Image 1 (cartoon, rainbow, N blue to C red):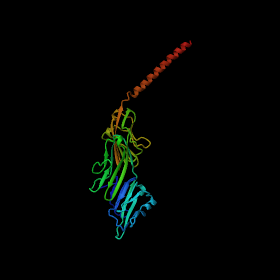
Image 2 (cartoon, rainbow, N blue to C red):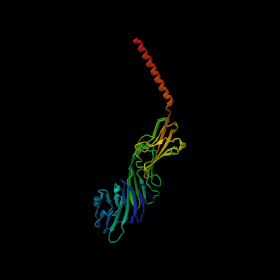
Image 3 (spheres, rainbow, N blue to C red):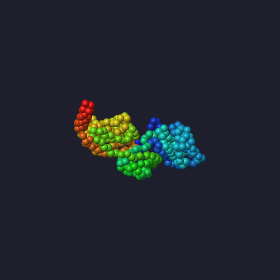
Image 4 (cartoon, rainbow, N blue to C red):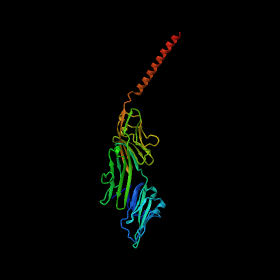
Length: 337
């Protein structure tokens, strides 16, 4: 199994920062993670788990075990110890739990400690999408071995375990749960999806078109791409919240008419809309953990009258008003005489 730094990275690393690390894991805040030890601990042996230089869980030779020491370093009610194998489970893991976890078996036979390096990332756990979006929840797994498991509550789609929901409906809102079970760890993850909203935009010619993502800045996404048909017309990148307008694309039809709305909303505005701007616009919102594809159908209708015609009507109305006022004034003067 190859797992990259997406949903549950599992890498073998040696000699990092002067410490011999057996297993390195990259997980998300809120995950439940089990650090596996496969052999049964002898009855006359004890086991100790350390977080950095602090003990957090102990299994004594007499069969007694305790995780109370973990309470003192921020793990209160979040540690579970398998009394047979010594595997340690950390529930609702936090970014401050990042660090090295060492398992030391103490018995008649000397054994080398096992060290797990755990990196906890703060990644969005709730995803708001629109009805009809295509949503892909990434595991990061590129190959699954026979003795390893990746399972979604709603089923697995594809050999890499990524779950894709096409044309999502309102009734598909809710929690999506992931389990990854490998030789070195068990990982449980939950993502909440909220589906709603509308995706059709209708404006009059000359008005603004806003392709709305519903996001403040990039809000959990690394990149947002806007396309008209097959043409890339704009993108927003997470790094410096940079906006790039490709307004010479699509034959230059959007030249000098693309901008990002104020107040750091990650959306696209098209100024001075034209009837030829009508069509389907594709939004591709990308992150390491999930991808959302959205199609927004835009209709630009004829405003009915040109600016010149409108100005002419206004002038004509003013002339009529002045004429009526003149007649009324003239009759009033005659009545006085």
